[in-house]
Image (cartoon, rainbow, N blue to C red; front, top):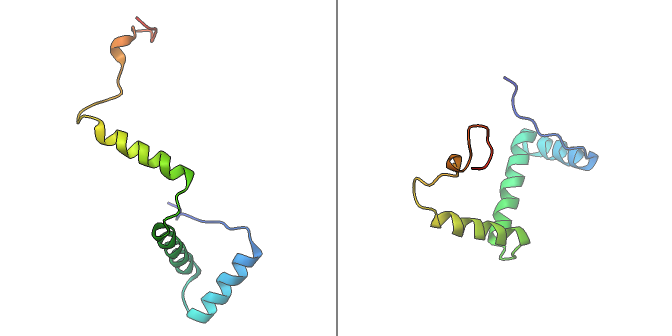
Length: 85
């Protein structure tokens, strides 16, 4: 099985990654992981709200209201051909 890959088509990113790799001795994939983790931490620490945050908040609220064992199966509303009863 092939390993996951990330392809970034930016000469600036490539040059920075290679320069940092030479300076630190870290492999490029580790440098990318560290950079993304740091950026994620910064965003989480930032109190700025983004429009999508409101959507995720609403989804979490609704998910908490769903009773255990609830499904989205509505087979009782359809006949054996998939037509509404």
